[in-house]
Every structure is written in structure tokens, then in C-alpha cells.
Length: 348
Image (cartoon, rainbow, N blue to C red; front, side, top):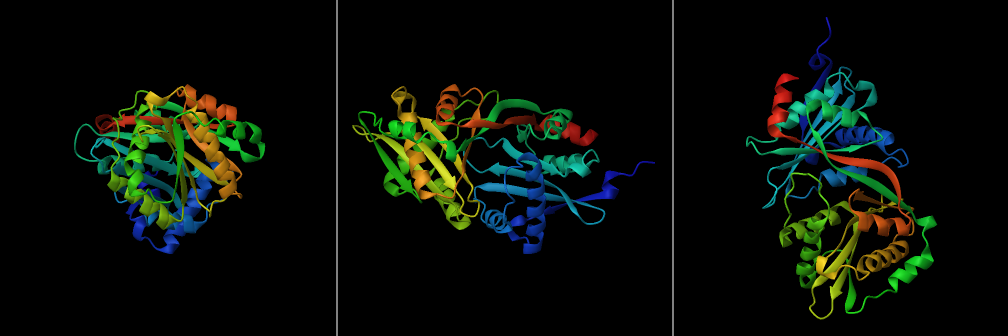
């Protein structure tokens, strides 16, 4: 008679924000082993980085974590669920399931999935989102099995800073579109630029979303203050470049980079957007190039800039390709409605 997964493996809910150093070390070891499969070019992450991040999660994120252990006590899997506490998209949940390769196809994913579904909420319009990396084919296979659908295809792109065309970057930085000025934000968003940053962030609503069940987001000053607090607490650095329309003082575009000195090899490109009324004037190239010049100067230890772009976002993909970004791996966003998730959870 086959052994029940529940007898071989156990799943427990944990609060990582208050977890002991020893438990966080276990979780970080698991995460590094999983990353070794999905992003083998990255060095292991220091446990101090994980500890700072889980102990300083933004207050508007409602998160749940589960850990799966084998019968010998070894940590072999992890589940995660998050809800963003905002005035829109209250139906969305972000989730992830990670299981070590040697322990797959033994029921752990199903066990973690059941916990995620049970914790997602009682209303009937909930949609749970998962992200997959094509280097780990077991992820899409599992999601297809439970009934999730792929909603948006994208790619993770890398820019090797040693191969950056510095001459072209200087030329783009010198574009200086007529009627616009560049404003820099180092660190926290100042009160006098708060409305400009909100417009910048909300312009990301114009980015391709495919067939996702996501509505427009509406950023608030309180959210920005909390992101800034979290960034400071976790030791991350941030640069924002705002393109400002001189005559009106309105935001025309922006780009943003994040950097963690404890993960010195990589810079993360966050959002880049140009307000529709100000497009086709070279603003995107201008701000991206100016930002790269700053990044090279401010973070000399960095070797790569990493960014994700939807396959359907042709304008941004074109700019990034000109700058030297190259595809590293494919990413997909999958969704499953709560009714289908409950149906699989009950039957699996």
C-alpha cells in the first residue's frame, strides 16, 4: 500500500516575521537551493538579507507562509500567500509553491496548495496568481494540473554593464527633450514630489496586462511612505528619475532602480513609464540612459541590471534591446479562480 504524503511529510504555518534566527537560516538555505535551479548564475543570498526582509515586510501586505518538512525533519518545501491591502484589486492573491527537486511528485505541492486555498478567503471572486520560470518546467506542469491558466508571458532580461555602449548612453542622456527637466530622488520621496511620483507609479497601469484579472492600481502617499520605511529597514537603496514637464510641472515619465549592497552584483530595474500625452519625444531613452549613468557611478560593484518585460511591451523591449539587455529566461503569470482552486483542493 502506498504511503500517504501526509505521513511522510508535514506542513506547518509559520510567522517568518517573528521566526528565530535558526529557522530563518533553514528557510534561506532552502531558498538558495531553489535559486540554484532557477537562477544558477546568482550567488547564494546571505541569511541576513532574508531576515531583514521578512521582518520588515510592508504593513499593507497581508502574508502567510507554510513550511514542508520530510520525516527526517529536513525543510523541503515552502508555500506563500500575500494580499495587497489597497482600495483596488481586493480579489487578487499572490502565491508561490517551492519544492526541492528530489521531493517533487510526492504530494507536497498539493499539500501546500490546499493551505493556500484555505487561507485565500471566503468570497467567491478571489483570483490566485503564481509566477513561473521556464528553467523550472515542473512549475507550469503543476499549475496546469491544478487548473490554472497562463495569462501573461514575459521575459527577464539582463544588461551586462561591462558590455554597455557608453557612447550611446551619453548620446541618449544628452537628448534633453525640449520643455522637460530631469529631477532625481535619492532615498525617500519628498513631500513636494509626492504627487509627481503617484502619477508616475499609476502610469504603470498602461503597461500590458494580457488577460489578467487585475484592475488599475491607485497609489497613495501612505503606501509610498511605507515602501520607503521598508526600504530603509532592509538596507536597500533606491534612485528615481522623474521627467517633469516644465510648463505645467506635471510628470511626463519616470524610471526607478533598486540596489541592495549585500547583493552587490545586481541592480534591479523597477518601473519605467512615460505618460501617454508625452510619448514619442525620446523621454524613455533619455531617462533610462541618465539612470544608467547614475547607477554605474553610484554602485560600481554591480555587474548586471535585471528587468522584466511583458512580451507584448514592444516599445520598452526595443529600448532595452538597444541598451544591450538580453533575454535570460522566460516568466509567466498564471491565474486560477477560487472556485476552481477549491474544486481541485477538495478532490486532490
